[in-house]
Every structure is written in structure tokens, then in C-alpha cells.
Image (cartoon, rainbow, N blue to C red; front, side):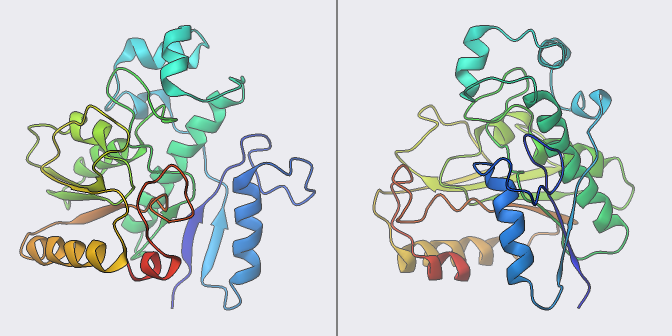
Length: 257
């Protein structure tokens, strides 16, 4: 089985820091754990490049992008994004996050069947502003890059995070080339939902069987469509152990998902 490329970044070091100098860096800890668990060497963890301004501008407004890159976001914009404390390292971190998605996309064009971005899925970022810890929408940027390839005509964005993918829905509203699907907590953030091509909201406390039954029906419906690429937002915040998720999914349920 070919290695599964998985792109990684650290907020502080930009690389896999094995010195535990920054023990609260969850991405560093996650990468280290994956290395230990991957006994058969199926996962190749890579540090991605920085995305370019031109790549980000494919889906985001120029004024917003330039304010962020120059460190000139307003306090209101920073508050809406929610990342605290706000550090200068957030700028390269964000560009590396998007770069990880873009390099994963390139792996697919180079022949991989599957590629992942450890810190991707920033689906709350809208065209002209960030929100919900999301600054630039890596899913949307990758979709636009992919659609410039002659072999890609239609893309599915399957978003199974507990929060609706409102930014992705807004960016591709009215664009028939990208079909956006969001299965999310009905009563969770964002409280003003955007309109995806297909939205399904789960009630608080939804358990594995009910969730997986609905997902199976959705996948069956989508199986008749002709998509060249699938972008899967694989959020795990629907776990019962996530105090803010409001759903009641088990670890086994998420594995089956």
C-alpha cells in the first residue's frame, strides 16, 4: 500500500519538534503520536511549504488578505476569528496550513489516491473575513486550484465537522462546479447558517447509529454523481467527550464514519 502523505505544521517551529520545548503544541504532539502508532509505515508526515498570496487570493478578498499578511487586522476582525493570544507566528502558521492542503492536492495529481492535512479544514473563513478560528479557507483554495486543471470539472466537499461549513458554502454559492455538503450539529456554531448545496442538522445528543444511518443515506444519494475529487472535512468534534460539540458520538462511531 502506498504511503499516505499527511502534512503537518507547528505554530511555533514550523517543523516536527521532538524536543518537547512547546508541550502545548497539539500538532506537534499529534504528529509524534501518529509516528508511534504507524508501525507499518503507511503514513508519511511532511512539513509543507507556505502558500503564496496569489493562491490565497483565488477565493479571498484582496483587502482582507493584505490586512492579515501585514498584521493590520482590526480588533473586531481578530475577535471574530477567536485565536488568542494573537501572535506574529499566526501569519506563517496560516500560510503553512494552506500550503499543506495545496501540497496534499499536488500529491493527488502526482498519483496518490489519498492525502491529508493535519490542521486543515478551515471551513468558517469567508471571502472577506475569518471566523471560528479559521483565517483562510484551505478547502476552497484547493478547489479553485484543482478546477484550473483540465482533468477536474466537478468537486465534492463533504464536511462532517460538528459545525456547519458556512465559509465554504458562501464561497461556492451558485457555483455548479463545487457541490457542498454539510452534516453538522443543528444548534451549534455558526448560529447563522449559510446555505450549502446539501445541509443536514443533527439534534443535540445524536448517537452513532442515527448519525451513521443519515450519513449512509447521503452517501448513497451522492454515489450517482460524477465527482473528480472529494475534499473531506473530517472534524472529530462530534465526539461525546467534546464538551462543546453537543453530539454524542463514540470513538468507534467516528472510526466507522
